[in-house]
Image 1 (cartoon, chains in turn red, orange):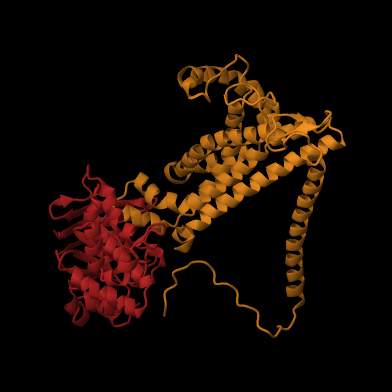
Image 2 (tube, chains in turn cyan, brown):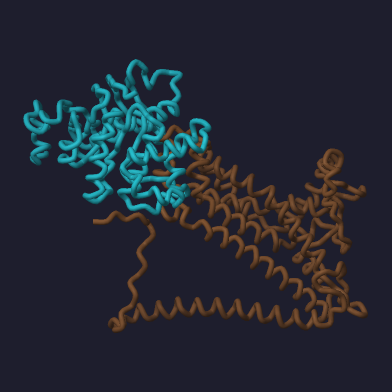
Length: 258
Length: 328
């Protein structure tokens, strides 16, 4: 189910501005890969190219290849809508559908894909909410609006919504940056459990978080204002945080940045 | 630290028992805004009192049932007048207008906000604004000179294929100066107002709600159905009420197109009927003091209908408030 991501020679543009330049990397299935780097270095942009969300931004354009196992996501004839159904995404700010109940939020993606019997949906709702460690908190109020939950609960609801459709890859764009430490811990624990079943890529500004949750870490940087972001190095997390092979990575991690 | 789940600004802190040192600017502004609020309430109360007083003068002398009689003859002996025909004509023409205008307005607003290329969207929004600025007498003339003759064909078609529904059965061969034509004309007139408000609301849909749907693998239409329309729901209702208010009260255009009569007819394509505003405009000049009171009484009914419609709309919006986008 979980798939390997193999990126080669990928550049992304906003109009004529090149945001990231020539990135190649491999993400192993059932692992957690963290992207770290200063603001504006293109980690979020790169993340969004992995499920073809970059191109919904006006002027957004991508060159290069993203292989999901042996399928190129950017081959002609590939429907971006279908890509997004297999590569799920969790955003920086929790964004449950405000007009939907908790139950409907979880099943929103399923209802796009086809028709299910109520019993099947109920099972998936419970399974997904348990998977997101939210079931015990909301099982008595599944018909209440999702927007009524706390920020951390909303984010876990969004994770439940993303895993309900059983994606092959789960992308997380700074999923904890709007959460308090307790909720952050809950989401981090969850990431550890989810990697049994999904390939996870997470963007984070919090280096301790990268060190805690990820197996591999990629460091992105940009050489100056207006320059495109580049991948500096990707390696096992332990190695990146103890003995990185590039000086810039060590400078960034130890706070001697710039 | 807790995460804010609401974007609404926090309510201002309640004033403490001790007055803060009075700054002149604060006091002037407080006086101005409080004064404005009071003036509004006083004006509203004065209008209501005026309408109620003059209406009561007329209704107390009415020999027919004011609410159900099919006649308007306040000068007669005995005076007999009732608003049944007017209420029927006003409500029916407005319903037709809403039924036509609201779906089209939603369509246009969606196109301008989510489908049209940017180069096209801005000029289109501008043209819609212009349409809203056309005076109603111009619409009336257009209706009488263009719409009425051109609708003859449509009327014939409706009569032929939908005549069995009774309401589209045309019993005479008169011109299309009917409630149906008025409804269509009103639809054209209220379309720009409704479209503009709905477009504004659609443009305010937070990007993150649309991306939530996109990331789940929603197509463009599914994004609209999952995030844009639910978010815009209360806005659509408000916009419709704005349009409905205009349709209910429209005077000149209706008076120009309709050939009024006080004979009740359920056949919408037949000429005849009337609306509150049209009736007042048509009869006011030649009415004596008592006749004017009678017209004012009919105006009061229109006032009440508008109030009820607005109240109903607010109820609908309030009932699902916690599910609305405002709570996100």
